[in-house]
Amino acid sequence: MFTKNEVLEFVEEEDVKFIRLAFFDLTGKQKNISIMPGELERAFEHGIPFDSSAIEGFEGPEKSELYLLPDPSTLAIIPWRPATGKVVRMFCNIFNPDGTPYSKDCRNILQNACNKLKNECGIEMMVGTEVEFYLFKLDEKGVPTKETFDKAGYMDIAPDDHGENIRREICFTLEQMGITPEASHHEEGPGQNEIDFHYSDALTAADNVATFKWIVNTKAASNGLYADFSPKPIAGAPGNGMHINLSYKGTQDNLLPHILAGILKHMTEITYYLNPAENSYNRLGSSKAPEYVSWGKENRSTLIRLPSAKNAQRLEIRSPDPLCNIYIALTLIINAAIEGIKNKLEPPASIEENLFDEKIAKGFKLEALPKSLNEAKNLTQNSEFVKSVLGAIIK
Image (cartoon, rainbow, N blue to C red; front, side, top):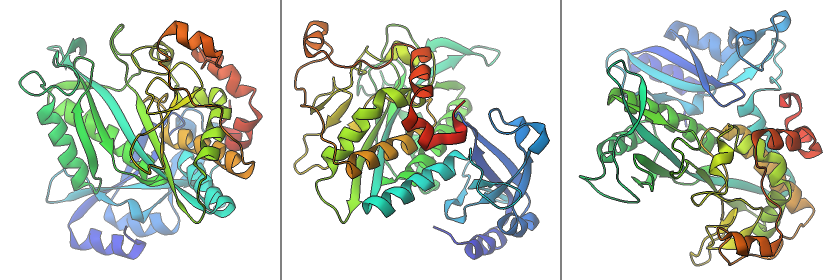
């Protein structure tokens, strides 16, 4: 957790030659500009300008200049770059020319949501993620194929599991960048992998997911492979999910039911941002991905699962997929939690039955998640809740 002065000192003493200033577009895709050490003081004081009209969903050419101000606490060495003439990265917040925060900066809106939760509810949301991805082979021209890296299954080991070494590389690289992975293993699908993260505050968790996806793509490419985070890379095979685990710390107790109720209340309205691709809706309702707005203790067929661990005060949201913008997703989830806490909402009855059994599921008459991207988008565009949270981001 560096300060500005510590970053300036580090860059000078550690032979840093390039500083990557990273930010995100509205889809959560990472962008960056590299500056030399001599520009770093200016970056901290005034920001580095960029053409926002070139970023889809940002501003038009008539008012396109925005500024990147680096967050010194996010400094990390990029370990696969040269040891002499080091390259480092910092995440940035985006500002208007007058110094006000830019309204479409997804990292800033998540910070605002975290501050609102702390100020209005007296707690801090803690987040841990479980991210899945497939590894595919490349052809002789370097183009991704549909041939998976292996044919292994859930938690298989080498020699069936070919991803063992790559997962180890990814975990070592994460540690070198200050991120501690919790666990890694082969998932159910052929060539499918999962890496899980320890809990951290929501903003750090989002930054970690962004860093993780970058590392996975980089390490896959260096091994002659392609990493696929899409929700349903192979028809008929398990999809890629990104389970989001939530807990909290603070002065209040017994808030989890209210948090749960708030999230369930707004789930269909925010699904468009949790599942942002057409084939997100091929994943939902199949291969252990949820279909209905529901919750249950230990029940992996429900949308939200409460774990069995003794005295566990956390919940697992099972519908999001890795293509979502994690900053926007967490912003919406935290604001839904705030509404649940402030209004003392109570969740519906838990479900202990297997909702993957269609006959059983129909007997509960539950609200279903959207069946298509278009349906999800319509629900979002008509949601007063989403409009109040995201404002200018809504198209």
